[in-house]
Amino acid sequence: MLVFSEKLKKCVRENGSRVVLALDLSPSVGEKDFKRRLLVKSRRILSEVEEHIVGVKINFQLLLPLGLFDDLRLLIEDVSHYGLPLIMDCKLNDVEHTNEWASRYFFEAGFDALIVNPFVGWKGGLDAVFSVAKDYEKGVILLVYMSHPGAEEGYGQRVVRDEGAVRFQYEVFAEKAKSWGADGVVVGATQPKIIERVFEIVGRKIPIFSPGIGSQGGVIGEAFRAGATYAIVGRSIYQSEDPKRSAKEIKEKINEAMGQF
Ligand code: BMP
Image 1: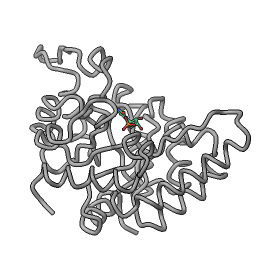
Image 2: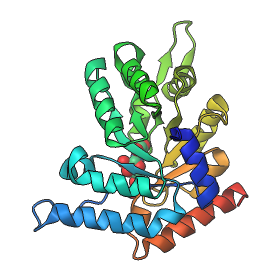
Image 3: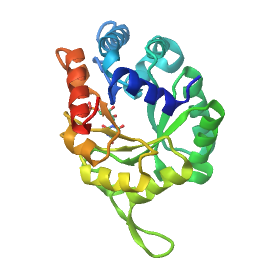
Image 4: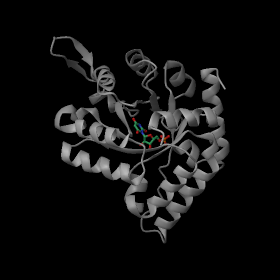
């Protein structure tokens, strides 16, 4: 079994892409047959775009209606069948015993990596997630700076470290990603300058996953020239009239920006 980072790199080589699909479909609750339609549509979009992506990210929009060990299993099996890594975007943020069980459930269900929130800290918080991930040989991705404007209030605040130095919170989180051995960091594509700074800290060893391209105003060229490794893209693909064509176009724009493939 390939570990998360190896699986990702294999998909980059095979699919020539750096796009992680955020499969956040959400038909209206209560509409007739909405759960079945959600599943069918998610599977269809995945099957259309799988050759142009390198991974799939799922969040509560699918997890809650479909259920981790119920209908979601079919989608998880599809992702595995396409050989793509699967990321659970739970932004885990709790004390150790609940973190531990949530992580176990996600890994047992077939997820390859989890996104966690570093605000909760290490001791009695994220230490549990990293420890479970190690047991299962899975990945942990740290939120370092989010893509929405309000991110400035937390991730962008100035903090005074023990030695008196004033730093940005996201710089401290990027350093923690290194010292905790994270398998990736999330930095919003809407903030290319922050991507650049995080890249200076984490270097090439820790990939930067960047959401916010397209629908949230992030620009592919700016994010990738600043150091993004992967784009997390949802609406620009799944709301497109032709998801396959859109995924391919985004893939090609990224490759052009990176000057490769
Ligand atoms: P879209 O391309 O439709 O804007 O979706 C972006 C995806 O990335 C969503 O799944 C969202 O939950 C996620 N995301 C984000 O938009 N900003 C962040 O800072 C962190 C995220 O995980």
